[in-house]
Image 1 (cartoon, rainbow, N blue to C red):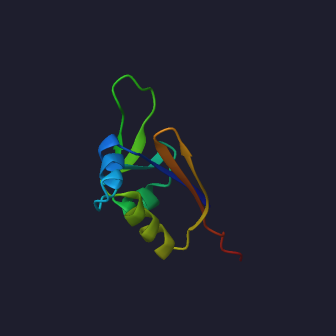
Image 2 (tube, rainbow, N blue to C red):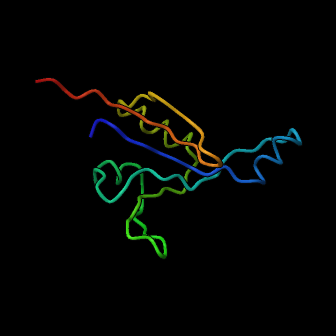
Image 3 (cartoon, rainbow, N blue to C red):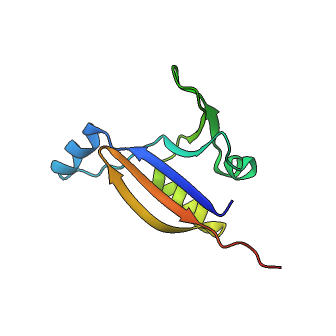
Length: 101
């Protein structure tokens, strides 16, 4: 799969730490895929498949912050092509060029 979306939530305590000029970072979890994601890639990332109560879909999550996930994806050839914030959610889109025969 040449495209991957990952996302995480910004939490209020992290924003308060930034305002207080203390070191902070998002600690995870990071959502790295859905039920149709590449299982090999999900294993590489150490993701667990979960289904939240009331949802009719599953998603893969890792306990690591987004920075660590982005680092791991870069090692295997993925590059960030876009990033955005939606309310308290941050989303990254990554792409990996397909191997040409």
